[in-house]
Structure formats: C-alpha cells, structure tokens
Length: 161
Image (cartoon, rainbow, N blue to C red; front, side, top):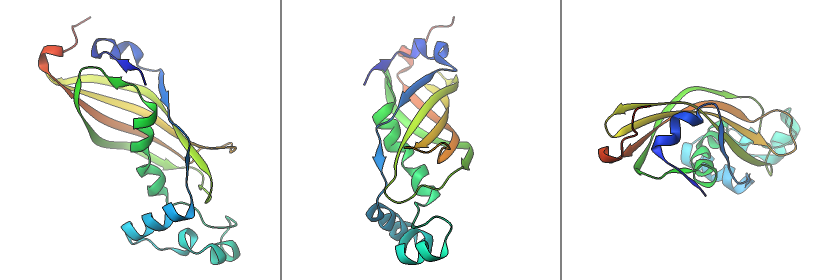
C-alpha cells in the first residue's frame, strides 16, 4: 500500500485513489450482522423462505452490512496519509443502496477523492465518492459520499499553493 503526502492531497481531487480487495459475503457473516443489529428479517437469515417468498432467489446481505464493510475496504484499498496520526469517520452526506448483494457474492470498494480542505492547523477533512461493486454484476451494491477526518501534527501542515 502506498502513501500520500498531505502536501499532494489537493492535486488528487477527482481521482480514484484506491480499490479494495474483494470480500465474500457469506451466510455466516450475514447471520452475525443480524445478531449484532437485531435485524432478523427473513430475506437475510432464512434461505428457504427467502428463496420461496422474495424476488432475490435466496438471502441477501443487509444494506447496512455492506455499508459497514467500507471500513475494511478503506484499509485494504486506500493509500495512507504519510503524516496522519489519527483517522476519524465523520459520516456520510449521501448513501444509496442500488442493488441487493446476494449471499455468496463478492464485493469491493472504489474510492474517488471528491474534496479535501484544512479545517484547523492539524485537521484535514476529506470526502470520497465510494462505489461498492458486486462481482459480475452491472449495477453497484451502493454508492455513498463518505467524509473522513485526518489528524496530523501541525508542523506537518501542507504549505499553501
């Protein structure tokens, strides 16, 4: 995994910065997520009923499970800021669940830097347009605008233009 210097970040706005490794979403992962969130809707946890009663032909991952996997996708696919001392998830401006992720599917994330700005002497706020793609599918599982904060030592502050 390569690194990016804070002084180079603004020149990368609009560029894809990384693509994560593929992650298989199996029934065991879906069941654990259902237990953690208390969301045991049959389309997620009951393969027989989901095959018989849903339009998906079987169980599907929770949309929020796919969203939660963005953290591991970020770690496996995004370059790190060389000077960063701490990264913080700030939230999302927009999330859209486009296509269901069928059990057994593989997904990965693509990250495009859409914005970056210094918030304080030691805080860089970044925004990424993220797409979670499903292997061998035309439409993505989800799209989102994800905002993150990179904290760094003020002495490492990028120099103005």
